[in-house]
Length: 297
Image 1 (spheres, rainbow, N blue to C red):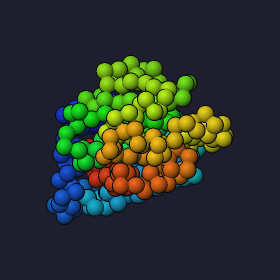
Image 2: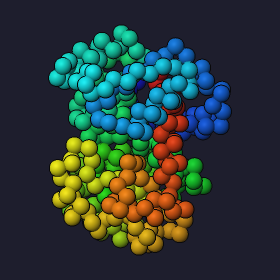
Image 3: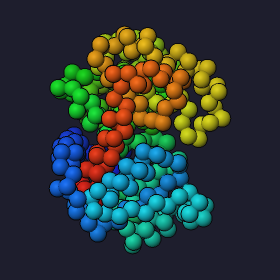
Image 4: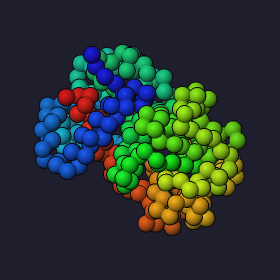
C-alpha cells in the first residue's frame, strides 16, 4: 500500500528516526544516492507561492536522479477549473508522487484519498510536516541529545506550531507555546500533545531557561488583511535580545522563513551566533530527500 505524508501524525517515532538517519547519510554522501529515484517524476502543485518548498523539492529530486514538474495556481486552478478528485486521479497516471501546497487542509486529505501515488503535504492551513521534521533534525544536529531539550515557540499558534508540537510529542521534547490570548494552537492539537506542551500568554515566562526559541510570521499567507491588527496584538512577542537573554546562553534561535525582520524577530537576533535559521532552511532539502526516498522508491 502507498504511504502519504499529510501530517506528522502519519509517522511513528521509529519512522521519524529512520528519516533522520537517512538524512544524515544523504548529507554525508550525496553521490551515493544520485540515482536513488532515477526514472521517477514528482508533481508539485502549488496554490501558494514558495521559495524553500519549491526549490528544495525540485533540487532534491534532481540530486536523487529524478524529475519534477511544477504546476502553478493558474495552470490547474485546483477546485475551480478542475476538482481535486479528477486532478488526483489524472496525475496518478503520469507521476510517481505529488506534493500539494494549499490553503485548506481538506484539499490535501482529498488528494491523498483519491491519488494512487504518495501525496506529500507541502503546507496547508493546518499542517507543515516537512518543516516540522527539518526543524527537529536541525536541533538534533546541534545538541548532544534531544532527551532534555525544551523548545519555546513564540508567536501565532499556526500550522508550523502544530507540526512542531506533533513532532516533539513523538520524540519526547518539551514545548512551551507562548501566544497572545485567542491565538493558541487548536484544542485538538493541544489535547493530543498535552504530555509535552505547556501554553503561556507571557513570552518572557515561556523562554526562561529554554534550549531553543522558535518563531514564525504573525500573519500567514491569506491573513494579509489582518496584518496591521496582528502587529499590535503580537508586539510583545517579538524575538529580540531581551527575550533571548532569558534563555540558555547557547540557545538556538529558529525561524521557518520568510521572516519579517523587525516584526516577529529582530535582524540582529536573526543574524546572531545563536541563529540556526539558514541551517534549518538547508535541511528542508535534505530531510525531504529522505522522505522522497522512503515514499517513492
